[in-house]
Structures are given as structure tokens and as C-alpha cells.
Image (cartoon, rainbow, N blue to C red):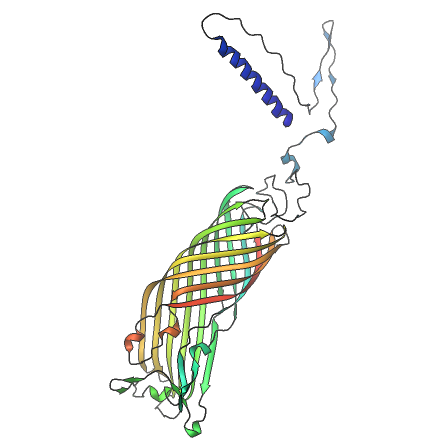
Length: 446
């Protein structure tokens, strides 16, 4: 190949000299014709057998073959050697300090076992990639609303909504996508789909009358009086018959999340670099549902029918918006890497709430349903480590933190004065939420 390139350069130089001489002679008078150029002898060895003939007294002698070169000296093209990279005779031996290379749609020159971030572009066959795994998450403690105090000691508040703290819950995630363009090096683009969810977070807290025999019960901090006196259910029972001087009071919580993303990926894959960065931009839907129930069992009072009453505060947040982010992989060795994936987005949030006050006989004092729109911000970061154990598979483990602002939380919907019905029909939407926990899974390409 080098001999061929030198021959081409020599021929180009000869042509340039001849052209320059002709141009220098001008057009004014006849000139001598240039001598024909001497034949150029090939500067590279022939790799195929050839024949020559000798003539003696005008009688040709049978041609004699020129011996072929030994097979060990013959040159071959990379395509004759499969996917082996001539500069890397042992492609499966990972070194340290940079990401490993790999074959791209059976193209040569990319020798090596490798798995680029999200598998890389057009590699491992058709350019498809994905991951599957599990996670364990919890949420931060909400702002506590004090609901209960000891009836004989108003200063002794004994329960708030934070006591019904959400526990840790398990869930799962799945992602898949495809790279659409790009070769072994350079910029490539792809599309990725992501979904994750966890089982509903649950929390509960209860308090009981300290000494009912001596008139020591549990009472509510919520004022249940109206302009005309105590508020009453349609069946005639007063609300404070249940929530003041109660035998017991309970708060229960149920939270659930859902997440869907569609991201466009842009990556400049550099096989020789330690750090690889893949940029992403896409749309995201994130939903947070919260159901909070505050209930009481009548104690000192004896309402007719059921002795149970409850207040429900249910909220739903549907966030839809645009996000930007990146995945940064740093290869400690060609099999072992650490990564970070930050994302941040701006979202429109459609919020709806259901606020109810009823007793065990299903007699409703309030049953309000309302909705509104707002603006929310959502940020997420994943950090972790991965280990590639085959060309098509690698395992990873990490930590995830997700924060949301500008959402409606159930704790923020509880009114201080039950008679203020307008409070129950307005949505407080300045809440915030943090989810965090661990995850682990497998990434593959095909």
C-alpha cells in the first residue's frame, strides 16, 4: 500500500513537470515536440505469478513462470482478516486507562470486546441496547401538620402527619433504545425509552386515649365549630363527637410514583479516552399520587350509628415537560467504570385534589374535587459503577436521588378551621418531594 502511494506521488510529480514545461513555451512560435517519457518501473513487488517470453531467431520460447512470493510475505487487506484489528492482534485482552473498542456492524478496524455507554453506536449487531433491574426507594419526611393532643393537657401534642412516615419500597425499571447513525468513531445519535416505578409507599401512626377512665382522651387540633356552633354531618351527628375526646386517632399514608421518559441521545465515542460523555434531551412524564387519611373513633361521646369518622386528603400531580442531561462514564479499566447521569427539567404540572369529611355511615359533610395547573421543576442524578463481563453484557449498581418542587402534597391540604370550606376547595401547590435509594441491574446490546 505504501509502495502504491509512492508510485502515485512520483507519477503526479512527473505530470506536474511536463505540464509546467508546456505552459512555459507559450503560443507565439512553433516549438519542438517533447520527447516521450520513459516507462516507469513499478516500485512495489508483484504479489501474483506472472510470465515473460524470450525470442530467439524470431522463434518464441515457451514462457517460464516467475516464482511466486512466499505466503508469509504476501499482503492482505483487513477485510481478509475478519474483524481482527491489525494494530490490536489480541482484541479480547482489555488494557487499562481507556474504554475498549469493538466491532461496528461487522466493520473492521474496531477490534476488541467493548460496551460503550448505552452500548455505543451501531455496534453489537443492530445497534439495539437496553437495561433491566430493580431499585429500593423511600421519600423524605413531609412537613408535619399537628392533628392530635392530649385532651386534659392542651400543650401536649401527641401526633402529626409526619409520624405516618413512608417506608422503603421496592420497584423496577426497564429501558431500551437504538443507535441510528455513526461509525466506529465520531458522533452518533440514538433514541431511548425509560420506565420505572416502585410499590406504593405506606406509613401509619395511631394514638390512644391515655386514661379514659379519668376523662383523659385524644382531641383534634382542627377547629370544628362554625358560625352557628359545632359543624354536623347530614345525619345529625356533630363532627367533634368523633374527633374531640376520641378513644383513638389514626393517620395513614399511601404514596405512589410512575415515570416515563423518551430521550434523544448524542454521543461522541472516542475509544482511546478514559472519559466518555453522552448528551440527552427529551420529554418526561412523572406522576406522584398521595392519599392521606385522618380518622377517629368516638370515645366520650356516643354518636348514633357508626362511631367512626374520617377526613381524606388525596392529591395527584401529573408532570409533563422537557429535560436535558448527560451520562458521563469514566473508565478506570476497560471493564470497570464509574458513571454519573444528571438530568434537569422544566414541567407543567396538572394537579387535582379530593378533600372529604364523612363518617362511618357514609354521611358526607364535604366532598370537594378540584384541579389546577402550575409549574414544577424536577432534577435527578444517578451515580454508580459498572463492570463489563462479556462483549454484550455488563452489570451496574448505583444510587439515585430525585427532587421535585411546585407540587400538591396531601399534608398541605388540611385546614386549620373546618368551617372554612374555601380552604378545602383551594389547592396548595408549593410542596416539594425528594425520593432516593439504590438500584442495580444488567445492561445489554444486540
